[in-house]
Image 1 (cartoon, rainbow, N blue to C red):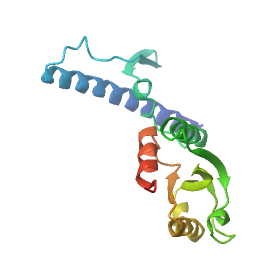
Image 2: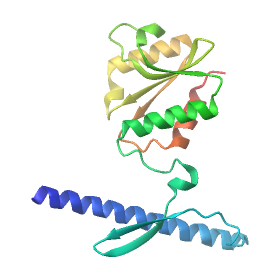
Image 3: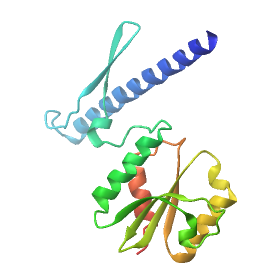
Length: 180
């Protein structure tokens, strides 16, 4: 029972921390708007999140609804995959997004780690993405795959599942490695 108590306390602290952070962000945004001379009635608002903890209702600003990318992926591979697919559809509509590409397709040996996603233009690979666990990026098999991409002039990057992997971050990574 001690393990479950600790887990529940940890999750409760995490929820409270997120709510407090959101409320502080909201107050800071309003203060910045007031300092700049913006009328608060003109400011965009988003729905609030109300969370009940031990019978007390706490209300915080839901920043995820503002931009769609502020939430941590929380180790959820499906969330990261949805974000990648959304970015490809929105920012790179003329490109084809492929899944599960073997590194041998890019000239790496058979032991090299495969890519989870590839962005292709006219059948030519442009950007390759791996979804990895913590420290997995250090593997020689991962490095071999990235070297094969570099040798062919194809951009590549990792998304580590223990990191937030916000939508804006992923979009910036796409743009940073996209060959000219």
